[in-house]
Structure formats: structure tokens, C-alpha cells
Length: 125
Image 1 (cartoon, rainbow, N blue to C red):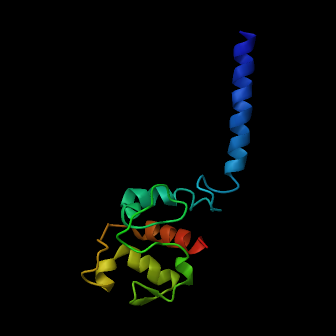
Image 2 (cartoon, one colour):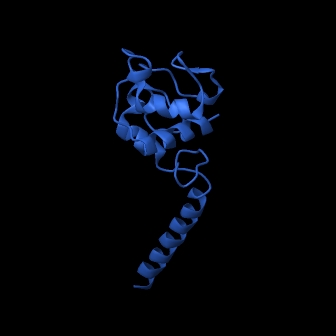
Image 3 (cartoon, rainbow, N blue to C red):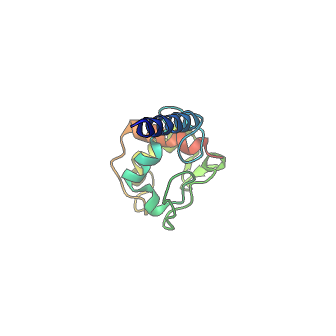
């Protein structure tokens, strides 16, 4: 019985320490605010990794769309929109509106999620 309690205390201590380290950055190695912590999961839900390489997003090895690395350093989005945080958010929500017939489908991304994704992408260097 004493060994069982000791094991429980040991596991609890390890999990507590791991939790403290996780608060320093997200699970994928990037610094993240509270709102950005679940952005990689949202991107997976919307299917972004299917087409794009995205830093700090598990399984994001797609080859259809451009890699989303260092997106903040680009002058234009999809060659048609000046690269601003607002335009990136708009593009994520409605790519067909800005460039009809492009390969990126309308995925029904909410404005809140588009803003979080845009902030996440712009934070990646």
C-alpha cells in the first residue's frame, strides 16, 4: 500500500513539472499565448495540413499549397493581396472571393478561428 502511494506521488510530481514546462510554450515547440495554444488543433480540424507545410503543426506536410513558413515576411498573399494581418484573416475565411478558382477551398473558417490562425502563422519565424 505504501509503494502505491509513493508511486502516485511520484507520478503526480512528474506531471506537475511537465505542466509547468508546457506553460512556457505550446506542445509543438512554439511560444504561444492562451488563445494560440489550440490553433494547431484547429488547423488540423479545418484540413490545413492536408495541403500545406506548417511549422509546429503535426502532420502538416501537404504539397498542394505553398508552405506556410515565414508567411509574415511575404509581400503578397496568393500573389493578389498585400500581406497584412487583416488580409491574411480574410484570405483564410474566403480564398475563393479573392482569387476565384484557386486550389484553396472555402472551409467555413469562422472569423475568430481565422484571426487566431493568422496570428499563429504571423508569429512563426
